[in-house]
Length: 95
Image (tube, rainbow, N blue to C red; front, top):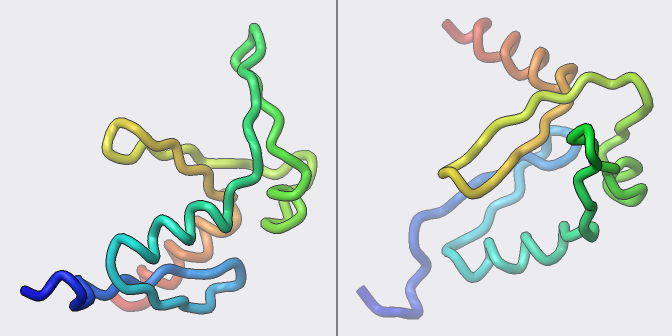
C-alpha cells in the first residue's frame, strides 16, 4: 500500500448526531487537537472540573448525569447519560 493512500475510513458522530468522515490517523490527530479544552487537576475526593468551553460545546449543565468509559486502558470517555439513552433506543429499534 502506498503511504499516501488513505487507510480505513472512520465515521464519528458529531455533537448533534451528524456524521463527520475522516481518513486515516493524520485526520484523527487533527480532530484531537481541535477538541482539546485544557486540563484539570483531580481533587482530594476524585472530582474534576470540566472546562467551560467543553461544557458549552456539549451542553453539559449542572445535574446532568455523565457515563464514564475506559478505552484501551489509556483514555477516559465521558458521555451524557441522556445521549447514551437515545443511542441505546435507536440501536434497540433496529433489532
